[in-house]
Image (cartoon, rainbow, N blue to C red; front, side, top):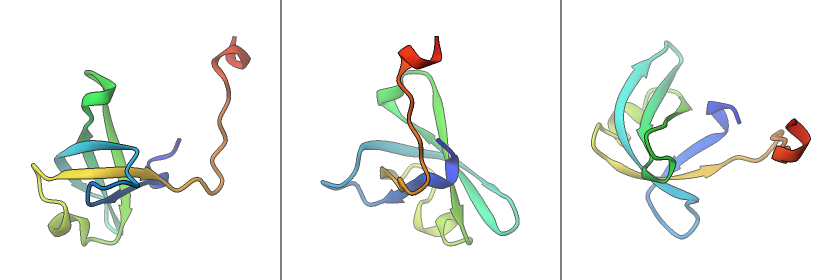
Length: 82
């Protein structure tokens, strides 16, 4: 899954999981929001957000809900990867 398919919103019933914003990386026309996701253990995740409003909308330390924009996303079973 690509980082631009991850969508941030206030934590709510449509969230797949919760995450805490740990840092932002400004990339010119978008921001990579790095997340701590307890459900992933020690792995980290980042969501690519277009525009710059995520810098103020999701400050470091914010708890956010994460969902997936499934347009164009493909999933494969682990058995198919072997």
